[in-house]
Image (tube, rainbow, N blue to C red; front, side):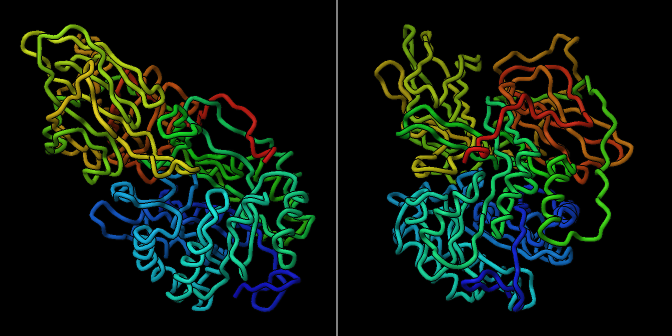
Length: 603
């Protein structure tokens, strides 16, 4: 059991220092969990920390799943087998640069529900989540022979609010359901954040990336006694679309870690291994002051975080620098450092085996819904993916401005199937000219959702699709056909025959098309898939959605872990939304783009 008193932590009665690293099971292929945990232990950590994202475990059917990729218990057991304690952070809010901060998108369909406070409707939903997740946690607790030594209440709540009744409800809910380990809070090292996020009688910890002595002075103002803990020591940073890849110098980071450990404090490295935002799970920030402001900043697919253990398991220079520092304060395990995971031999795949236009495949992909006006994804029971809207615009009409109010996030617009242009939620008020002939036109709008906000005051305004309506000139358009496109299964798509660009059948830019490629491997191995010349879209490997790609960068390759590959033929499907190219490349090195200094060096 992990306990603490005025002097510090005690584990099974002996003085103890937590040296932890954050490793998120939901960002790692489950066949690689043991590999990543072995690498964490080899660095000198004695603990692993992970969030438990509500929306990852709650399936679209409403069932809550803890099997397979969602096997929290198996991940904890592997940690224990590797000599690691476990810290769990089950939310309900997790931030983590994860889609909607871990909340199920369906909460946005509940009128009047207020997140992260003692709103009765919200608390009822949270209680349902606790009813599902706590029974999975109980067998893992140290009191029952498991590895879980601590559980966090909420997550950096003081950065958001100050509802003490809400925090007490969460604390009481965990205790009443049988969680008997150490409960704690984690908040930024600022007075207002500690004031809003701490719970009297429970351990308070701090989150920061630099100047540990100064940060701990803040924590001491709110917790005069007891162990000092950096629950998130930010040693890198996440990346957003269109900005450089964040890195933090290994030697500078190691000096900061040394300064922290020299205080006698415990630490959780955020992140020890970042992993990948596979599928549609990458979150977003919003820098605007109001929901309609520009400022939506989606995160990229990679969550490498410039961590000591790279996205594909690399032991980086930061790993070795951190291991040396940790070795000054704690015994290092007597193990050989793990070898690099195997990688593919580079190859170029220059010919698609088939193509399928998205607009021509709508009936294959989904059934239509009929609504008087456009509705956002959440109102039609959809959480992730794209959503398609169709209506008729009568004619004849001169060119009038077409406006979409409340776009989340990018709307591809078509008139009678011909690309008209793109409207972006970051350019509110922008329009496209649309003229119609005597017969009118069919108006198609395909909305690409780019991650719900995971941090800040605008969480409740993170709806996707079309939020309010569509106007042609001064006239609202009604009578719509809606098609949710979660794209969870592409098995029914009907592809054309083998095609290359020399046959004159190249698709036009702005026309969304699925391109199917075949890659042959002698044996499964890690690969990094590059799409040179392509615009933006999605990439699947053997039916698994690796994530989003975009010419905006910074990320230029998508990580495709070895367990997703097969010996022999493998299917790659590219859904290109804007600019079509000819070839797909498999590479043996990642390319996360041009770099810039991570802000954690100053936070």
